[in-house]
Image (cartoon, rainbow, N blue to C red):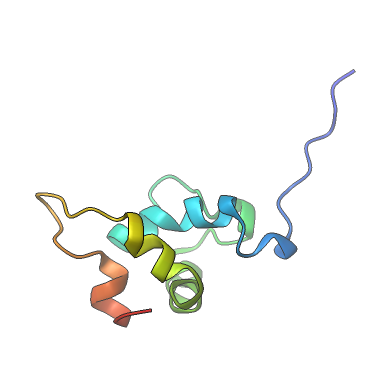
Length: 84
């Protein structure tokens, strides 16, 4: 018998799953792959509104592992919100 998959709950804020979900948005400003949908963020307006708060919580951790690319020298969130 298959088990019912539990959706991610709000209490998982700060988890590894949330960090991974925000990584693409911190880089580009958009959630191209719908990684934030399990956290209730599906609309671009909602994502943009929640990004600043997520950046203050997860930004320092993100910057430790972020590497510049030939397309972006700094992540979008750093340009938009400044240092976490």
